[in-house]
Length: 301
Image (tube, rainbow, N blue to C red; front, side, top):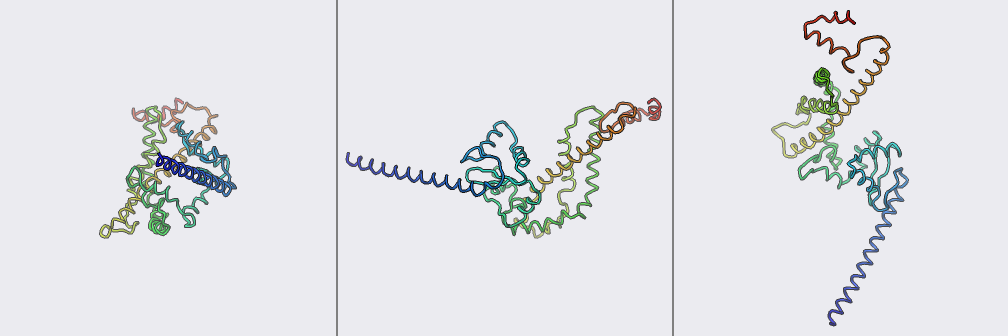
């Protein structure tokens, strides 16, 4: 019994000291979070949902409703400006929407990339994803080397040489839109724009001139292959997203211009349009397909 009493006494003291240590650690962590808040609270940002969890409860609520977290980021940028603060535990995340600041942060060695975050982009589901491409390379010297190699692929001379391909794919899109208009069916513009973007990327074969990489098949090493693969994935995703957005914005601008033209001249009498985009041209095509005379339609009108 005396042995059990001694063990119980030692265990009680150890448990007491463990509780004291845990309490002191928790108290220290609270002070550290408070210090982080005081250090960065001069940066504009939304009010925290929780002292410990910061803004993470907001993200959890959005995801539970199958919402898009990035829409909340955009909302905060509109309210708090191009640079705003996000708190999660003792971590501080800065949301930056200013192009000049984004360029400075991504290109300057003064702003190291977070190891934990970019390690998550290195692999996806256990397979190599972005690897050490331009977006995820944490070593500035490696990033700078890759940037110098990639620069020729974005020269104005090289891009001007692809205008024929761009115009050809645009003509294909117009043919598809004409077919949709003839069938009086709805057009999924996002899907069509994405298809055009993929078509352009596939057509130009994503840097078909291998001299851009300053690599030949004879001296290609495993490191060179990884470099090419990492940047292929990086630029493929970036090109798909960027070109899709640009094409969609251009298409939207063209729609607004057509609407303006319609409003400007609709006071002049005329037959109803067959299509918002193609106007009366479907009527002319139907007449010509039947070997009719378009000028008879003009006379009828």
